Image 1: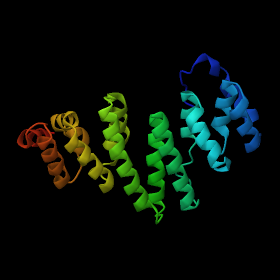
Image 2: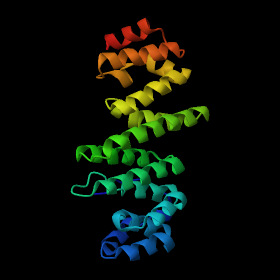
Image 3: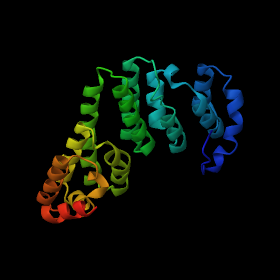
Length: 230
């Protein structure tokens, strides 16, 4: 069932195409995405099986589709599928990361980490290296976003990644590095420590608040007291 969304008027009626589009082949749906009007493109993206779409085509869509359609594309990334090869999960990690790099749409960020979760849950041998790689990429992405003064994008990263994945060691280490390099982040984390640190092991809480203090946030004793009050 689709959640009702406020879409630009050029997409009016797109849901009406879905029943017929479910009977089309993947090549036919690809042609709709490539050449159709906006409402038909969105409907095609809502039913297409991305597994059958060539990688080059996917990457072209990531770069060129309007935001509304790119969000639908991101939501169609088949994370959490059972009984698929682990290298297929890696494909979706790469697509989602490319999508976020190019578009900064939070949907790609959500699907990126859902794909990593799927690899870990299925005990893929490639999962550990993928988490490490993506966490390093995330750290550099945060540096770029903060250097550009893009507070909205950094807030997306906080909301969809740091608030949910700091119990993963690689993500925690990237977060710690970002806190230690950016005074504004250090101040935010030390002033509201429960947002990120509640539920983490005490040693991780201490490391983070000490890094924040060194980077220009509240003194450790003050931020630690705030966290203990919670």
